[in-house]
Length: 192
Image (cartoon, rainbow, N blue to C red; front, top):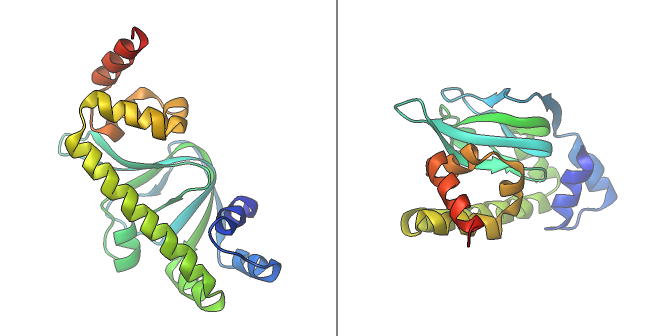
């Protein structure tokens, strides 16, 4: 489980063998089954979760009980309700498992201790947060300014893993479209 995390970290910063070994002591390893909740809205988010295996989604339920997907997390991705985690407020997001998952979880206390004992991990997390902010800004621009077809084509080009691994109803929710709209777009593109 830790090989993927350490590899992910090594892409951003250099860890020596001792640091990599120490890093492991700050995480809890957990297995989750398909459809199992990692976090439910209303609870306080206790962990940042690194996905070693599987696929997760974070979402809200709208007033009609329809899922509005915020993000997916594949192998090598982090997921959490960051506002809840950082501010210890009730979560607004649900996080559950789409495909059986192996997660590495770190609580706030261990996170703080990790960054004290391995200071360069502060840089690693800063890089992650910067990238996350850029991604969310870009997603907001796409959501507000692209047509339904442009949104879908952008996803196909930039996140083919999503298109290949996820059913179109989840992709539709992520893009803010109906499954019928996704079907029409796919059919139209097939005949182009």
